[in-house]
Amino acid sequence: LEQQNHFRNEHGIKAVGRHIPAALKDFAELSDRYNVQSAMMDTMVKCGYNDPTPVQRQALPCMLEDRQILACAPTGSGKTAAFLLPILHTLGAPQGGPRALILCPTRELAAQIHREALRLSASTQLRCSVLRSIKMSKIKEREATFRKSDIVISTPNRLCYLLNQDAVNITLEKIRWLIIDEADKLFEGSADQESDFRQQLDQIMGACGHKQRRVAMFSATHTPAVAKWCRHNMRGLINITVGQRNA
Ligand code: ADP
Ligand code: MG
Image (cartoon, rainbow, N blue to C red; front, side, top):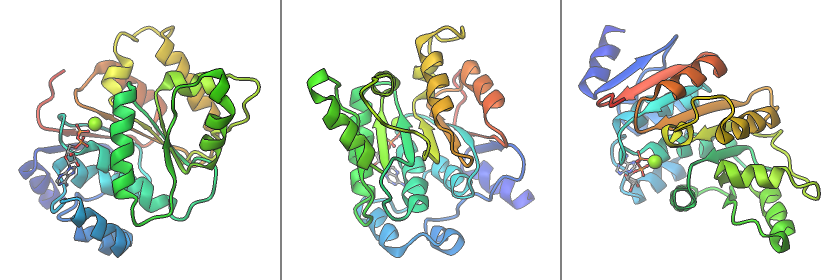
Protein backbone atom coordinates (compact mmCIF):
# COMPACT_ATOMS: atom_id res chain seq x y z
CA LEU A 1 0.00 0.00 0.00
CA GLU A 2 2.82 2.33 0.97
CA GLN A 3 4.56 1.43 -2.30
CA GLN A 4 1.39 2.07 -4.29
CA ASN A 5 1.00 5.51 -2.75
CA HIS A 6 4.60 6.29 -3.51
CA PHE A 7 4.15 5.13 -7.11
CA ARG A 8 1.01 7.23 -7.52
CA ASN A 9 2.74 10.27 -6.06
CA GLU A 10 5.59 9.90 -8.49
CA HIS A 11 3.08 10.14 -11.32
CA GLY A 12 0.96 12.88 -9.80
CA ILE A 13 -1.99 10.54 -9.34
CA LYS A 14 -4.41 10.90 -6.45
CA ALA A 15 -6.97 8.16 -5.98
CA VAL A 16 -9.69 8.14 -3.33
CA GLY A 17 -12.10 5.32 -2.66
CA ARG A 18 -12.30 1.76 -1.38
CA HIS A 19 -10.14 -1.10 -2.61
CA ILE A 20 -8.47 0.86 -5.36
CA PRO A 21 -6.79 -1.35 -7.96
CA ALA A 22 -3.02 -0.88 -8.23
CA ALA A 23 -1.88 1.66 -10.82
CA LEU A 24 -0.30 0.28 -14.01
CA LYS A 25 3.48 0.19 -14.17
CA ASP A 26 3.40 -0.25 -17.94
CA PHE A 27 1.08 -1.34 -20.75
CA ALA A 28 2.49 -4.89 -20.64
CA GLU A 29 0.69 -5.31 -17.32
CA LEU A 30 -2.60 -5.13 -19.23
CA SER A 31 -1.96 -8.55 -20.69
CA ASP A 32 -0.57 -10.02 -17.45
CA ARG A 33 -3.31 -8.71 -15.18
CA TYR A 34 -6.34 -8.50 -17.48
CA ASN A 35 -5.58 -10.77 -20.43
CA VAL A 36 -5.76 -7.92 -22.89
CA GLN A 37 -5.07 -9.53 -26.26
CA SER A 38 -1.73 -9.12 -27.94
CA ALA A 39 -3.45 -7.73 -31.05
CA MET A 40 -4.75 -4.86 -28.92
CA MET A 41 -1.29 -4.32 -27.47
CA ASP A 42 0.11 -4.20 -31.02
CA THR A 43 -2.49 -1.58 -31.97
CA MET A 44 -1.39 0.60 -29.09
CA VAL A 45 2.23 0.37 -30.19
CA LYS A 46 1.15 1.31 -33.73
CA CYS A 47 -0.68 4.33 -32.31
CA GLY A 48 2.61 5.35 -30.68
CA TYR A 49 1.46 4.60 -27.14
CA ASN A 50 4.60 3.40 -25.40
CA ASP A 51 3.83 4.27 -21.82
CA PRO A 52 0.50 4.87 -20.13
CA THR A 53 -0.24 8.47 -19.18
CA PRO A 54 -0.92 9.08 -15.46
CA VAL A 55 -4.71 9.05 -15.84
CA GLN A 56 -4.46 5.87 -17.91
CA ARG A 57 -2.31 4.20 -15.23
CA GLN A 58 -5.13 4.49 -12.72
CA ALA A 59 -8.30 4.58 -14.84
CA LEU A 60 -7.50 1.49 -16.93
CA PRO A 61 -7.21 -0.95 -14.00
CA CYS A 62 -10.27 0.55 -12.33
CA MET A 63 -12.48 0.15 -15.38
CA LEU A 64 -11.04 -3.27 -16.20
CA GLU A 65 -12.08 -4.30 -12.68
CA ASP A 66 -15.57 -2.94 -13.35
CA ARG A 67 -15.22 0.00 -11.00
CA GLN A 68 -17.04 3.30 -11.47
CA ILE A 69 -14.76 6.31 -11.64
CA LEU A 70 -14.64 10.07 -11.79
CA ALA A 71 -11.33 10.91 -13.47
CA CYS A 72 -10.08 14.50 -13.56
CA ALA A 73 -6.98 15.06 -15.67
CA PRO A 74 -5.75 17.96 -17.79
CA THR A 75 -6.60 18.37 -21.47
CA GLY A 76 -4.32 16.31 -23.69
CA SER A 77 -3.57 13.71 -21.04
CA GLY A 78 -5.04 10.72 -22.86
CA LYS A 79 -8.48 10.44 -21.28
CA THR A 80 -10.04 9.12 -24.51
CA ALA A 81 -7.94 5.97 -24.61
CA ALA A 82 -8.42 5.63 -20.85
CA PHE A 83 -12.09 4.79 -21.46
CA LEU A 84 -11.88 3.30 -24.95
CA LEU A 85 -9.38 0.56 -24.13
CA PRO A 86 -11.40 -0.99 -21.28
CA ILE A 87 -14.59 -0.78 -23.38
CA LEU A 88 -12.95 -2.45 -26.38
CA HIS A 89 -11.46 -5.16 -24.17
CA THR A 90 -14.55 -5.94 -22.11
CA LEU A 91 -17.05 -5.93 -24.98
CA GLY A 92 -15.15 -8.68 -26.79
CA ALA A 93 -17.06 -9.86 -29.87
CA PRO A 94 -19.77 -7.81 -31.58
CA GLN A 95 -23.32 -8.62 -30.50
CA GLY A 96 -25.56 -6.07 -32.13
CA GLY A 97 -27.20 -3.44 -29.99
CA PRO A 98 -24.99 -0.86 -28.26
CA ARG A 99 -23.29 -1.97 -25.07
CA ALA A 100 -21.25 1.17 -24.58
CA LEU A 101 -22.48 4.74 -24.81
CA ILE A 102 -20.17 7.72 -24.82
CA LEU A 103 -21.69 11.15 -24.19
CA CYS A 104 -19.79 14.35 -24.89
CA PRO A 105 -20.76 18.03 -25.25
CA THR A 106 -20.15 18.71 -28.96
CA ARG A 107 -20.23 17.10 -32.40
CA GLU A 108 -16.56 17.95 -32.93
CA LEU A 109 -15.60 16.06 -29.80
CA ALA A 110 -17.78 13.15 -30.81
CA ALA A 111 -15.94 13.02 -34.13
CA GLN A 112 -12.56 13.11 -32.35
CA ILE A 113 -13.52 10.28 -30.03
CA HIS A 114 -14.81 8.32 -33.03
CA ARG A 115 -11.48 8.72 -34.83
CA GLU A 116 -9.59 7.43 -31.80
CA ALA A 117 -12.06 4.57 -31.42
CA LEU A 118 -11.58 3.54 -35.06
CA ARG A 119 -7.81 3.49 -34.58
CA LEU A 120 -7.88 1.57 -31.31
CA SER A 121 -10.52 -0.93 -32.43
CA ALA A 122 -8.57 -1.92 -35.57
CA SER A 123 -7.87 -5.42 -34.25
CA THR A 124 -11.48 -6.00 -33.15
CA GLN A 125 -14.73 -6.61 -35.01
CA LEU A 126 -16.58 -4.10 -32.85
CA ARG A 127 -18.67 -1.46 -34.57
CA CYS A 128 -18.45 2.08 -33.37
CA SER A 129 -20.60 4.94 -34.64
CA VAL A 130 -21.37 8.58 -34.04
CA LEU A 131 -24.99 9.61 -33.91
CA ARG A 132 -25.26 12.07 -36.80
CA SER A 133 -27.66 14.93 -37.29
CA ILE A 134 -31.24 13.81 -37.11
CA LYS A 135 -33.38 15.05 -39.94
CA MET A 136 -36.76 13.40 -40.28
CA SER A 137 -35.77 11.99 -43.65
CA LYS A 138 -32.75 10.27 -42.06
CA ILE A 139 -34.38 8.93 -38.96
CA LYS A 140 -34.72 5.29 -40.05
CA GLU A 141 -31.09 5.34 -41.19
CA ARG A 142 -29.98 6.65 -37.79
CA GLU A 143 -32.08 4.02 -36.05
CA ALA A 144 -30.53 1.23 -38.13
CA THR A 145 -26.96 2.45 -37.50
CA PHE A 146 -27.65 2.75 -33.81
CA ARG A 147 -29.07 -0.75 -33.59
CA LYS A 148 -26.10 -2.40 -35.21
CA SER A 149 -23.41 -0.52 -33.29
CA ASP A 150 -21.57 -1.93 -30.30
CA ILE A 151 -20.37 1.49 -29.24
CA VAL A 152 -22.32 4.72 -29.80
CA ILE A 153 -20.92 8.22 -29.38
CA SER A 154 -23.35 11.12 -29.13
CA THR A 155 -24.20 14.44 -27.59
CA PRO A 156 -26.98 14.08 -25.00
CA ASN A 157 -29.24 16.26 -27.20
CA ARG A 158 -29.13 14.04 -30.24
CA LEU A 159 -29.47 10.85 -28.28
CA CYS A 160 -32.52 12.07 -26.37
CA TYR A 161 -34.06 13.44 -29.54
CA LEU A 162 -33.75 9.99 -31.14
CA LEU A 163 -34.97 8.21 -27.99
CA ASN A 164 -38.04 10.42 -27.91
CA GLN A 165 -39.21 9.65 -31.45
CA ASP A 166 -42.30 7.45 -31.35
CA ALA A 167 -41.44 5.89 -34.69
CA VAL A 168 -37.95 4.91 -33.52
CA ASN A 169 -37.33 1.63 -31.76
CA ILE A 170 -34.00 1.70 -29.96
CA THR A 171 -33.00 0.56 -26.52
CA LEU A 172 -30.24 1.34 -24.04
CA GLU A 173 -30.97 -1.78 -22.03
CA LYS A 174 -27.78 -3.53 -23.05
CA ILE A 175 -25.53 -0.62 -22.11
CA ARG A 176 -22.75 -1.87 -19.84
CA TRP A 177 -20.61 1.28 -19.93
CA LEU A 178 -21.97 4.79 -19.87
CA ILE A 179 -19.11 7.23 -20.38
CA ILE A 180 -19.59 10.92 -19.74
CA ASP A 181 -16.68 12.77 -21.31
CA GLU A 182 -15.95 16.44 -20.58
CA ALA A 183 -18.39 16.17 -17.71
CA ASP A 184 -17.40 19.65 -16.47
CA LYS A 185 -18.65 21.16 -19.76
CA LEU A 186 -21.85 19.11 -19.77
CA PHE A 187 -22.69 20.04 -16.18
CA GLU A 188 -21.74 23.69 -16.69
CA GLY A 189 -24.57 25.99 -15.71
CA SER A 190 -26.67 23.03 -14.70
CA ALA A 191 -26.42 23.34 -10.94
CA ASP A 192 -30.18 23.35 -10.70
CA GLN A 193 -31.99 20.09 -11.29
CA GLU A 194 -34.16 21.61 -14.02
CA SER A 195 -31.42 22.13 -16.59
CA ASP A 196 -31.70 20.40 -19.94
CA PHE A 197 -28.62 18.30 -19.40
CA ARG A 198 -29.78 17.06 -15.98
CA GLN A 199 -33.08 16.01 -17.48
CA GLN A 200 -31.38 14.32 -20.39
CA LEU A 201 -28.98 12.51 -18.10
CA ASP A 202 -31.88 11.34 -15.93
CA GLN A 203 -33.66 10.00 -18.99
CA ILE A 204 -30.53 8.25 -20.26
CA MET A 205 -29.69 6.76 -16.84
CA GLY A 206 -33.27 5.58 -16.53
CA ALA A 207 -33.08 3.90 -19.94
CA CYS A 208 -29.77 2.16 -19.16
CA GLY A 209 -31.45 -0.62 -17.24
CA HIS A 210 -28.73 -3.29 -17.31
CA LYS A 211 -27.95 -4.68 -13.85
CA GLN A 212 -24.25 -4.33 -14.51
CA ARG A 213 -24.35 -0.85 -15.94
CA ARG A 214 -21.30 1.14 -14.97
CA VAL A 215 -20.71 4.87 -15.26
CA ALA A 216 -17.34 6.50 -15.83
CA MET A 217 -16.91 10.28 -15.88
CA PHE A 218 -14.02 12.17 -17.35
CA SER A 219 -13.27 15.82 -16.91
CA ALA A 220 -10.43 18.31 -17.30
CA THR A 221 -11.31 20.20 -14.16
CA HIS A 222 -12.64 19.36 -10.75
CA THR A 223 -16.23 20.63 -10.58
CA PRO A 224 -18.32 20.41 -7.41
CA ALA A 225 -21.58 19.74 -9.35
CA VAL A 226 -19.98 16.76 -11.11
CA ALA A 227 -18.41 15.41 -7.92
CA LYS A 228 -21.74 15.63 -6.13
CA TRP A 229 -23.64 13.87 -8.90
CA CYS A 230 -21.06 11.07 -8.86
CA ARG A 231 -21.26 10.66 -5.07
CA HIS A 232 -25.02 10.30 -5.30
CA ASN A 233 -25.27 8.09 -8.37
CA MET A 234 -22.19 5.89 -8.55
CA ARG A 235 -21.79 3.07 -6.05
CA GLY A 236 -18.21 2.19 -5.10
CA LEU A 237 -16.96 5.37 -6.74
CA ILE A 238 -13.23 5.93 -7.14
CA ASN A 239 -12.10 9.54 -7.55
CA ILE A 240 -8.98 9.88 -9.64
CA THR A 241 -7.23 13.23 -9.90
CA VAL A 242 -4.13 13.95 -11.94
CA GLY A 243 -2.11 17.13 -11.80
CA GLN A 244 -3.63 20.35 -10.59
CA ARG A 245 -7.11 20.61 -9.24
CA ASN A 246 -8.08 23.79 -11.04
CA ALA A 247 -11.61 24.08 -9.71
P1 ADP B 1 -7.75 14.35 -23.33
O1 ADP B 1 -9.05 13.72 -23.66
O2 ADP B 1 -7.26 14.00 -21.96
O3 ADP B 1 -7.75 15.83 -23.57
P2 ADP B 1 -6.81 12.85 -25.60
O4 ADP B 1 -7.42 11.56 -25.23
O5 ADP B 1 -7.46 13.62 -26.67
O6 ADP B 1 -6.63 13.78 -24.31
O7 ADP B 1 -5.28 12.55 -25.96
C1 ADP B 1 -4.40 13.53 -26.43
C2 ADP B 1 -3.42 12.92 -27.41
O8 ADP B 1 -2.55 12.01 -26.76
C3 ADP B 1 -4.09 12.14 -28.52
O9 ADP B 1 -3.47 12.47 -29.75
C4 ADP B 1 -3.83 10.68 -28.17
O10 ADP B 1 -3.80 9.87 -29.31
C5 ADP B 1 -2.50 10.77 -27.45
N1 ADP B 1 -2.26 9.70 -26.46
C6 ADP B 1 -3.16 9.13 -25.63
N2 ADP B 1 -2.58 8.21 -24.83
C7 ADP B 1 -1.28 8.19 -25.15
C8 ADP B 1 -0.16 7.44 -24.66
N3 ADP B 1 -0.28 6.55 -23.68
N4 ADP B 1 1.05 7.68 -25.23
C9 ADP B 1 1.16 8.59 -26.23
N5 ADP B 1 0.15 9.32 -26.73
C10 ADP B 1 -1.06 9.14 -26.19
MG1 MG C 1 -10.94 14.39 -24.06
